[in-house]
Length: 114
Ligand code: SF4
View (cartoon, rainbow, N blue to C red):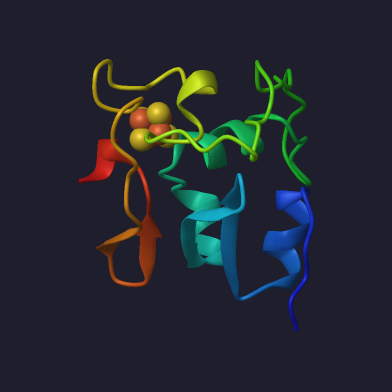
């Protein structure tokens, strides 16, 4: 079964494997528990900061600054670059990262993990 949501906490509770999409592309894919414990892509991390945890102490939530990209005009670089606080100047805006396996079963499309 494929379940689509923005609620990562719920998703991790009910799934075996998670694929995170941004601008129509998979940017991270991993077994659910591993992704929840050690997210690697900056977008995945930002999503996790935007939702309250199901258990544990309350914490302040944060949103993701900026707007989703205009999908009618494709840029050569990383689609998340304009909103990414970790972007590598001179690289992320020019070169689109490819989805790579960084550890067994964990795939990430980000220049920080090449
Ligand atoms: S490739 Fe660069 S801009 Fe894109 S998510 Fe990774 S660090 Fe951020």
